[in-house]
Length: 615
View 1 (cartoon, helix red, strand yellow):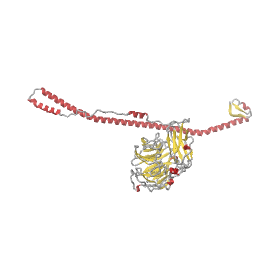
View 2: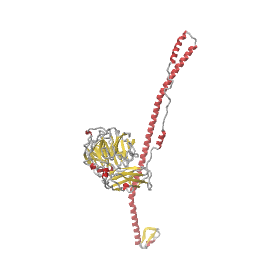
View 3: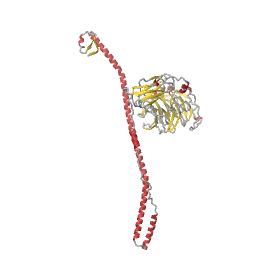
View 4: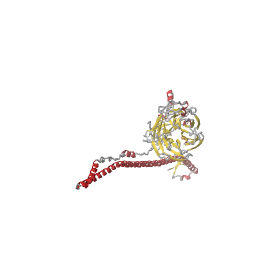
């Protein structure tokens, strides 16, 4: 066996294990050179192997993090299962108690009627029997003057008994049945709950389709994503955690819609708003799939018809005029309509420092004069005064409780706690007003929480963009109810974004891809729906932020049309916020400050803006 890289220059041969010692007799210089050559080769290989250690260390850390997240998810789901079945047990016990009480009440009412009838008949029977016995005894004796009075009394008594009205027909029935339709319930229980997972990995999954090669400004482009397991085999089930982001040349994000075909393939549909160098990032479980990010170069439409479809640019916006109220609308005086509103100030530029933003999303305003901004790609929340003065910020990037991965929604609880929807962590985090982590809720239930709000009872309302569902939680994390599913029906959503609550405790939701705003009761019953796709008064091109003023007027950020519209409580268009001086570009979250102004996240311009608003 040859000794690797060891060579005797004197013999001009490679050395084997058996002859290394023999070659010690050769010139020491030759052997020394051979040994030095071997050392150099060994050091090179050592260096190559050592260079792999950082990569292996990073991989080890990442896989350990995934394992920890898996363990955390297991514990969270186990807790949810226990909690859900405890709730079901409680509900079953309550229903059992109700049925038993209903049985006792129903039985008691019927029993009372029948018992009264029995008592009446028993008394009548006793009176008749006693009188007849006395009469028979009198007739058995000898007739005399002394018995005449007794016989007359008996005769009168018999006359009364003949005409005595007794309830001889049943006054109630004995029907008391139980209808317990348990088959459907048993089937529901049998199918109750599903553990959802896939074997998909990002390193093997791939994308294809025309949307990777070409896209036309203002027109939908489509990309198909095929998920695969570690061996490259195609996954056959859906529900993988997939994210897709189209980045504009200035760093903002174009929203799109991911459709899960439930067979391991997914379709991402997006629309680019203008020409330029765009990029598409496709991530599976927060890791880029093969080839991601992809470079996109949109082509212009090049026709007047195409330009019309694209819609007006933000700079072309003009102030809207009030249209006639619909038959359902309530006429309002001009002083109640925010017609003459304009920009007070703007705060922010693109960056990662204090007062700088990268893809700001949700907005909230507190009663103590603070404006809160969910700075999504900077993984933090920044806090300002109503006058725009920076106060503080908090947030650390990560996937553990207390960390933020992609904060998109923010709200302030009456207790002062700050509630944050974390889209990529798939839960809602609760922080103190000082930014200290307190708890999380919705883990294991939420798929992509986008917006959050708080109702009149202090319950947390979560708009799940991916699940197309609105969840309502107690602050403790207990689920109260949920409603909605994917679709275009009245009680369905297609990529819902944000929510607000009016004075009737009704929930107002912006339905992004259905281009409408929907109002629901806390139980999820539809109260009102308004809006359609377009650029006219009262129409939307993907609504996002929403707020309600003290008069019940509904203020909506119209993302695709880059404007803010105002409606009355019945959905009738009132006006625009005048944004012509400094046009919006892709507005997201929206709120009303404590001093009555409108604050909006101008995501495309990497800033937030505050406008005058006449209530």
